[in-house]
Image (cartoon, rainbow, N blue to C red; front, top):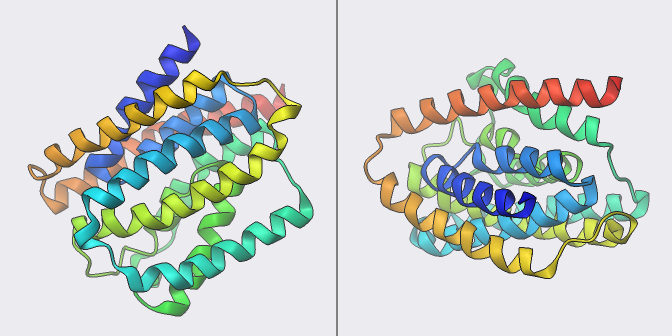
Length: 243
């Protein structure tokens, strides 16, 4: 029953991400964290989100801003090297606190201070910060969103460009935490084959719905959803650390 719930959650959150380009990954990571160990949650989330974002790359391939990807990748690989040296795995309490805190931290930063990811040095810094967030919390959407606030990209360009950078981050996270999976519970192989089509189908449906949503509503709905869910995850993180 638990695995069935994880598959349904993957479908629903992929649909959410396909429409809003935010919130879905964070919600899904929290759900996985409720039922699985940190390494298992990171690995399964990495598989689903790599498939989800990877399909989004194809769906929005004409809108991807490729000049952002190379410097972003350089920053991401540097963080991977650091984690390989440290071999660090966060506790479940820390993971939930970070998942819940990122959106509120993002709100505290004024829009006028938000950097534009279209600049190559900024894209490199984004790779450093966003990948660090993914490795510690499993998600990084609210952190990555900061680099798009001042950009003049359309919602389709944002979704396509975020998809390719997020896919890279989830593949890195998946590969890293797979090394620790033997220290915790094993996941049945069929679960991985089930969540991938669920993630892709959710994205296809999200793209269909996307054309009916205005840019203004697109950003407002996403912000409200992620802040509500983040409050729940902060409470869960505190409970884990204090128990």
